Length: 278
Image 1 (cartoon, helix red, strand yellow):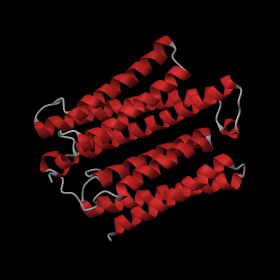
Image 2 (cartoon, rainbow, N blue to C red):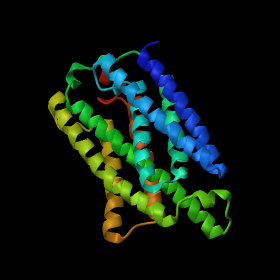
Image 3 (cartoon, rainbow, N blue to C red):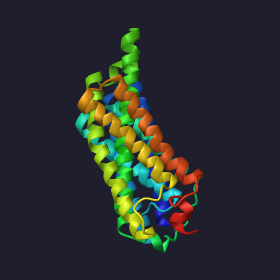
Image 4 (cartoon, rainbow, N blue to C red):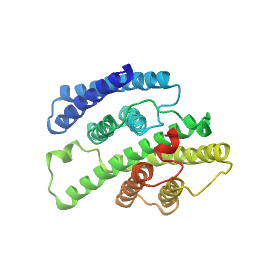
C-alpha cells in the first residue's frame, strides 16, 4: 500500500468519525460533541491536504485524472468550502449535511482503482489544474447552497405546520439560510463561469476547438443556465426563499449528474478513459 493510499484511508476514517459526531451533535445539546465534530473535521481536512499533496508528488500530475482522485478532490473541496462557511455562520447543521456527503464520496472513491494514471499527452497542460480546481470549487459552493436549500424547506415546512421537532431549534433562521444561499450563488457562479471558460481554452489547446458539444460540455452549459436564471431572478425579479432554495437543489442535482453521469455512463472526451489514455 502506497503512502498516499494509506493517508487516504486514514482521512476517510477521520471523516467517518466527524460525521458520527456531527449527527450526534444534531441530536445532543452538548457543546463538547459539536466541538469534537469540528476538530475532527479540521484534522481530517489537514490530513486530506497532505494526502492530495502526496498523490500529486507520486504521480506528477494534478490528482483528478481518475475516478478515485476526482472523488477525493471533490470531497476535499467540499470540506474546505464548508469550513469557510462555518467560520461565517457557525452552524452545526450545515456540517451535518456536508460531512456525510464528503464521506460518501470518499467511500465510493475507496472502491475505485487506485493505480496512478498516465495522463493523455494531449491534455498535459497547465490549464488542466486551473480548470478542474475552479470546477470543483464551484461544485462545492453549490453543494453548500443545496444544503442550505434543504434546511430552508425543512424549516419552512415546520413553521407552516406548526409542528416543531428538536431539529427546528438547531436550524439557522430562514433569513440566514436564504442569505447563505445567495452568498453561495455570488461566489459559485463566477467560479463555475471561469471553470467553463478555462475549460474552453484548454480544449482549444488540446483539440483545436473551444467547444465540441461533448456531453459534459453540454450538461455543464445546462447547469450554468440554471444558475444564471437563479441569479437573474434574484437580482431583477426578487426571487428568494422557497423558490431560490428549490432552484439551488435542482441545480446541484444537475451538477452531480454532470460529474457522475457523464464521466461514468456517457462517452466523450471527458470520460476518465480519455483523461488517462487507458
